[in-house]
Image 1 (cartoon, rainbow, N blue to C red):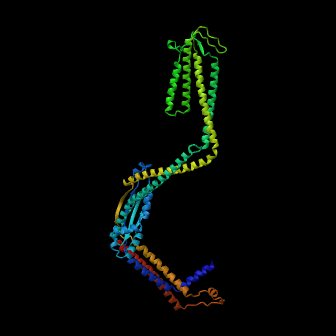
Image 2: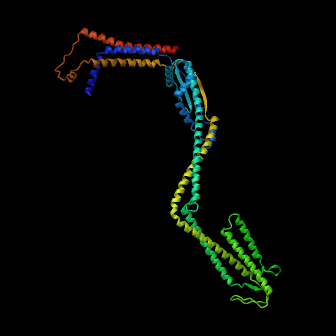
Image 3: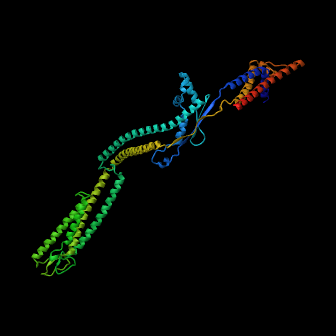
Length: 536
């Protein structure tokens, strides 16, 4: 710490020896600086305020139907990018500044000057912007601000229209591209399904889903077949306990035919109902459908049964005395009594025929399901490959379809958005028209004069220090010993005479008077500038 203080003290003593040079430099810098401050031309500022209203009632009403741009962000970006070279060139033409620039160099200089001078800034409130420009001529400053306001409004409206047109054109191109991709994907998917229509995993369901569904159908068909078989066996056992014919003396309610003929009304009714069922099924299925084939088989059996009843009745009418053998465990009818078909026996037999047809139909169904099951299990090796290919094709198709639908939806939204922009979603309002302040805003001579005083004093001190380094003088024996590399045995102090002391005192007074004069000149100039500004 002591070494540092000693070193600083040495620098100050060395610079003090050349203080007159520093005083001269300070006066030169001060006088030149004051002159420059006084001759600086006045700058007049023109400004205007613009408010961008983005809170349109259409925006919440059209939410979800249109593309809602962030208008606040767009206006903010526009305010930052508006002061560009093309816009400044347009501004020069609008404000007739190109008349002053005769050569290309002058025009380039003017453009660079305007880029640095024109300001477009936010006032701190929402969407309120201030355009300002400073110039020596108030009228020219007002023209530049007016042209800048016009550019700001036109750039906001024209930029949105241009962006909308470009977006719409891009969407149209993408829709055409995805339409062709979607058509190709549909054709590949169609060809795959047609090629593997009969194979498992050919595009409709996955292998395990088809296998599980087919197993369920097979189990249900086997259960139905067992139920139909049990019902048929029960009917057979019941049929063995009934006599096919009975005496005409035995009466059953509801079985006698009008005129004494055989009773076939029930069989006819059932045949008619089955034919109606066939007509209904033919509207949905072909002639080879299992249900239609089963109904037709039952109709043939009922028609044969009706014919047998009619023929038996006719034979008994011709030979009334002929006896009939009965089944085991039943009594023979009385001799000479007329015989007629047993209606209970006929009904059981009809039901048995229906049960036989149902068993046959269910047997065919079970066999068909079993055949499908066996074929599906045999072709299980192809399933992973087919399912993987179908999944890939279907995934490509779904991706293209989704993108196509999204693009079509965005195109419609873009159309509505263009109409909404044309109706004026964002409105530019000129809150304060371009005006020029009556007093100049620059330069601030009071501050500049203070800066000149500080700079002149610093320049004087720097000049003294620089000369002391160029022409060093040793004021300390230790420093001399360090630099020379030899020991200093002693030093002799200088004793000043009275006359020399008076001389040095007068020099000090003159020096401090020079500094005071510089400060007095600064104060005088401050007073002069303040008086001139107050009188203006």
